[in-house]
Amino acid sequence: MNTLLIISLIGCNNDSSGDWSFTGEANGDHTAPYADNCSDTNNQDDTGDTGDTGDTGDTGDTGDTADTEDLPTDGTGYNTDDVAYDLTATSQDGSTWSLYSQGTNIALLVGDMDYASTTGALFYFSDTVSKYSGVSTVFLLSRNEFSSTASQADAQGYASGYGVSTVLFDGGNGTAALWAQSAPPRIYVISENRSIVWSGTATESNLITALNALTKE
Image (cartoon, rainbow, N blue to C red; front, top):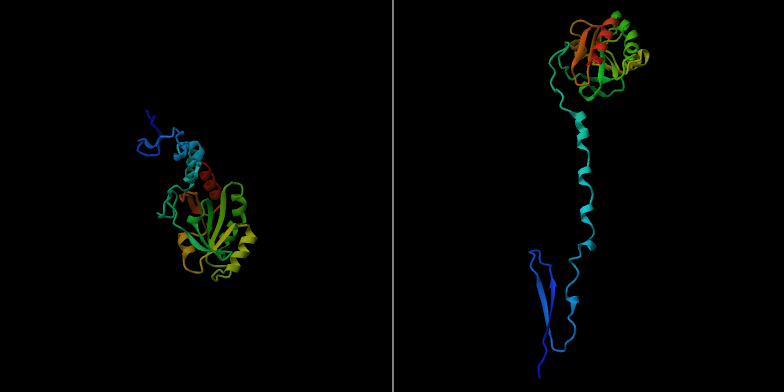
């Protein structure tokens, strides 16, 4: 009597090498092969489309950080076309103010309040600058109108009285004298890239000239 031998071969391509592995069963009873020995791991559609796991190309548009372009970190002087030094002093609110931290165009008036020409400049300073957009007003001084070292209270009074955005006082350390360059009151117009667009004697016509030069940049 002839016996029929049935061998069931179940292929599972689970090997990452790409080779096929087989399980076999010699079934003398002629029963059907058992396919459950292989799980359906090849059906990758069931594992989720991991190709859609986030468009990582959109993870932060770092191209928008171009505003932090390299800026000069060392000043070169106090004259037109020089790179401004990092003016640092105390403001009317008691905080430390730094020119290099501003990131905006600055109109700077330097002088002491015991000079009549300084108080005269303050009368037109903020009003003239306000006609030009994107320019902040800063007033730097060392002495008040009584020839005493200016205090925070003095700075607060000048800020509100003359409409200046920021009033800086140096506490008598010589910063104002240095920026006045022996010719107070002095005006600077400094661009947001820290370049001195114009500097010179504080007059209203000079301030307008300086601001016009800024807008042409």
